Length: 123
Image (cartoon, rainbow, N blue to C red; front, side, top):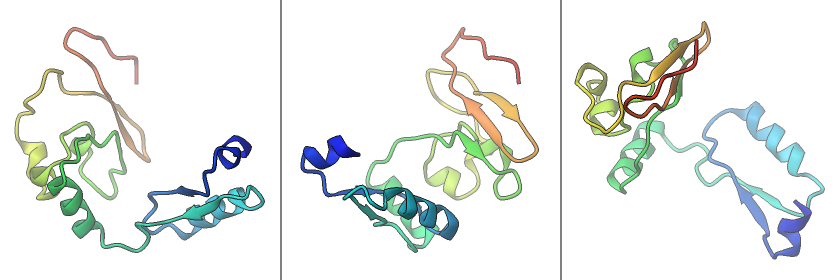
């Protein structure tokens, strides 16, 4: 953080939307650093933000999902309108890598990105 201040950086932006405890933790950790914690996405509606990000060209894949909140099959799929519509996980995935290696835990499902021919680690 000291280096950031020396290089003229005035703040750090976080992508948190709603978790008050996480925000408080980030603010506490930033206190005394001379850097302002910024939360430009705070409170934005998730569905609207997701659609805006996809429309703007965001490319990505969810790497970890809470099976209590989303279908486990969302892990590792393309983050696009079809996924946001809830249908992508039912369709075949078109890509240069195979269905991700999934680690299933009671609290989350983690998708490890694997290229064709690559072997995953044990769950």
